[in-house]
Amino acid sequence: MTSSGRYLVLTTSNDRSLGELEAAVLSVLWDSTAPLSVRDVLGRIQRQPPLAYTTVLTVLDRLHDKEFVIRHKEGKAFLYSPCESREAWLGEQAARSLKAASKHKSHALLMAFLDSAERADPDLLDQLSALIEQRRRRRSP
Image (tube, rainbow, N blue to C red; front, side, top):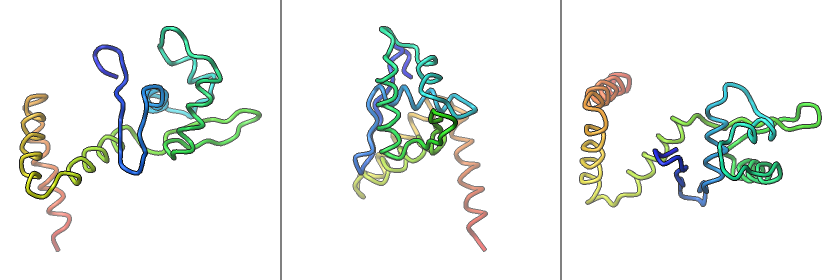
């Protein structure tokens, strides 16, 4: 969610995009430690005016069709869980953005990413460097 209280619209290739309501519902599932029913999700979404039960049900069905969530039946209701963590999703989005950059512009994109990361948290560059070094050590024989 942004500082204005609005949810970001997230987009990927293969038409796996998330609209505002889908992002809001998925955020509720990511914040939960257990699978949630439609009613549970409805109770946790902070929106004005409040959403209808059928709206949340439709959004969860769309997320299931797009393979963002899994569901299993418990009694008469389905319980929903995200297919991947928020961190895995965001990491995938960052990797897709970097891959989508043309070869001659990838250096500029990486530099812009590092500049943004450093502005957001100066210690982040050290963390990134340590993770890259750790990954390199694991790959080398």
